[in-house]
Length: 297
Ligand code: UTP
Image 1: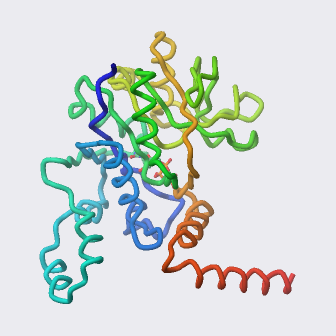
Image 2 (image 1 turned 180 degrees about the vertical axis):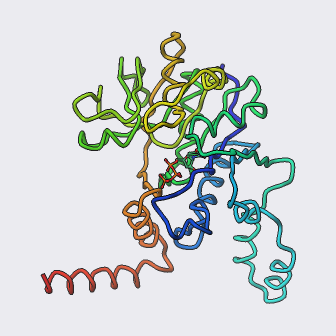
């Protein structure tokens, strides 16, 4: 039985250039989907999966993120005085206990692999999760929970995977599949951002990982790869070369790429339509605006 996964790394040190100028002063991970910042969705998913230690890899200009997890006694008192129990619950959901949370600085945005490597000393010799908060996954059973359960069977490293259209492979790490084992697929190779003609499949890695601690060692010996960045994919590929088990995991759920403008808008609409308090008004508005636009075309 593999060691249980209790630690998660949240790399949040990227520059977020696709959302400039907003990200000049607001970290991407604090941007709001309906009424909660992206990071809150990631934390809730991790908690549901049994994660107990939350490690944030941050950077200059991200202090709003650290403030977000602080307790806010004044706000709490004001809500208590007004008897706003529901809002108080929502506020308390954001709190993280001091011993549960750690912040590490990535001094230069050298890539996701480098960001993960920054958390090395806090991980030690245990498997660990990595969650990219800009990938938001709507699922009946939270994606990381599905993965923790699958990892108890597969051990080794497990990466969340989904089919993408062939013309989009150059935006993802792509799996070279050896065999299908139910929701898990055994992987014999991984390539970061291949052109469509070079892609070994159209099964793409998205922002949820459970990794063997050996991946940290490989990151120490990983040079810059695709895009001039230190790539997590390259370190996982090294694990495969050494014969260690690496699986892709076809999760159940809908993933939204909230690191892109189109993905963020789609998520906003989908999450809005999923909310009983907003659904009717939003649906009526969408129907109306689409019919007006269609008539104008
Ligand atoms: P992205 O590839 O989305 O990059 O990073 P980015 O910098 O956040 O955004 P763009 O492309 O400039 O718009 C994927 C995840 O990896 C983290 C990001 O914070 C995001 O959660 N990351 C990326 C780091 O923590 N450090 C890095 O050096 C690069």
